[in-house]
Length: 152
Image (cartoon, rainbow, N blue to C red; front, side, top):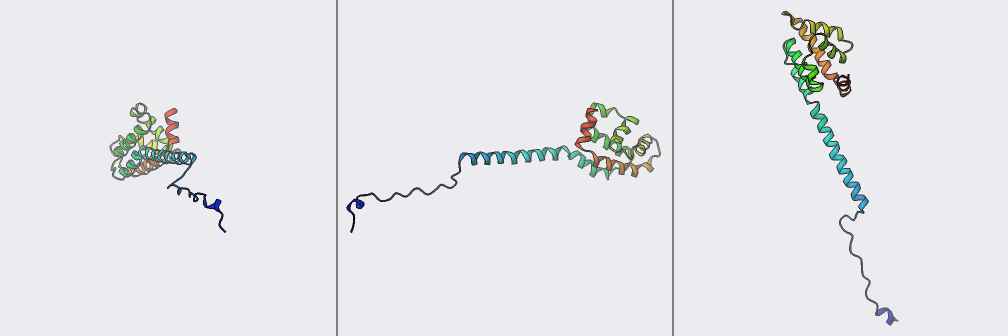
């Protein structure tokens, strides 16, 4: 019982197997956007890491400082890097201790005393307290503080 009309039909054509990744254009755009986001995130992290590199280096160099003048020079270098160079380069005495004290509000008086004694002959007793205050100052230095001081 074979039907002669059915025998005249051509065999069924099977479709081609799907490609490796048959994604619509929207998916390709999403993948491209994700790749761009990842690149931008890595770039942002790298800039952030480089921006704070001097602060990290200063924290490690602080341990090697043996005098208050070395500590002061280290803090001055860090401040000139992060704040307005023209403004910081000329600061000394009370204005310099006020700038450092703007970050260390609780320790402002102790810091002012150390800065006042900075250029006296026998200021060795101030080295360790100044080193600890400098470490606190470096650790608490943030983008918010930099913006406040630069726009003040």
